Amino acid sequence: MVNAAGKFGPYNQPGAARPASVAGIRDARVLPGRGQTGSELVRSRIALQVRLKTVSPGDRLADAGVLAEELGISEITVRRALEGMCQDGLLDRRRGRAGGTFVAPGWDTVVALMHDADEAASLDAFHLLLECGLVAQSADGIPADQLDGLRVLVEEMDLSDDSARLLELETRFHLDLAEALGGAGIREFAADLLGRLCLLLPAPAPAVVRERNRCHAELLTELGRGAMDPAVRAVKAHQHAGPS
Image (cartoon, rainbow, N blue to C red):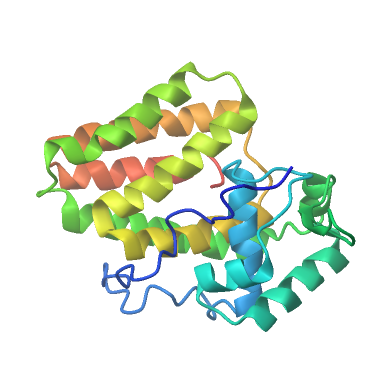
């Protein structure tokens, strides 16, 4: 099935604001240790698409030129990244009239071989720093309706019994939280982090996601009343509920 939208979503829109400074992070594009290469960016954004169900195993990806424009990198970089993902078994290249680049049916099996607990721990700690910083600078000045969409996601997670849907909703929560507290540029940065974590960490069990969702609800309650310290504690409790 062709991905009709052909989009990575609102994480790298043309003209989007650059990430703001948060909690001492001067350039939010710099990840722990080193910045992402163009190829790593392609990999992380495709991984995020799969987690968000924008594409699924067997779906066709947008053409390299479209992806290059959306990500702000060269088409040759995208082509090389896609070729590398094909070699790794994450993607399939098909020729002919109905050809293109497709998410491999065995995506989950291949990703499981790429898990890296040490690198994931570093990225997870940086994600915690990002969210604590966002909460610290925003807790006393958030319009009441700015959290409504996040509350809807929390309610949906409470009602869902599907493990894949729970993962999708949790990821959307953290993307939307980044945008609500930091703007479109910070959402873009959070997408980089979360996409990489999708490749590096095993998916958490539904029970872990539900425990984290209680932390989501507590965070929104504390943000709604402008209580910065309890809100930061809720962010930290989320991490202790299990790996991100």
